[in-house]
Image (cartoon, rainbow, N blue to C red; front, side, top):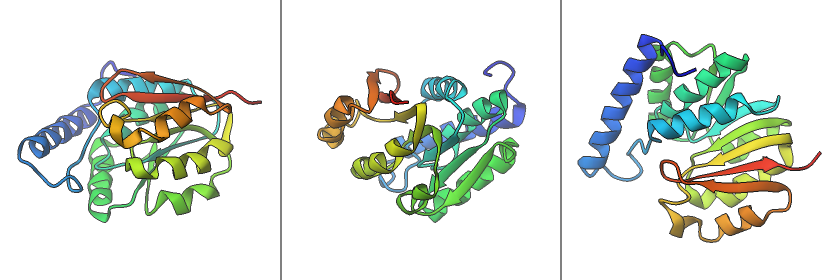
Length: 198
């Protein structure tokens, strides 16, 4: 998946990485920053997604579409499509531009709106990447976990870098009897959960 990235995708990834670095160095307001995953997390997520069972592949928190580019590689490899959600109109527009410039619209569908309202329409989830506001994680989990197929995967970013913000959520997720879960110390820390039910 990672060898010989299409030139258009590599160029857009580099542009987004530069934008993210500028956001972090110039003191941009938290809500306006792209807050992207690092490339190693993108590769990790793509490997997870490529090995997830059949079912919808979703992302909550598209931002400018950087993580979706990595996930699109998994979609291409296994013949699936990512549905990514972004509540911010400005970031959703950036994501649309990303998917157009990178040439991945065949593999990525952007839904602009509140994922808490939209996700209940999804019946069978094979993979879900959560990169949303930490305060939303408990509510998102309660929508997503019952909809996971057997062996379905959830990945949640920032559980090490923002430990204080997930102080209540993380222990509950790790102890959830419906899931086999582990925190992987890659990037900002990724919680990976697998539906252990039938």
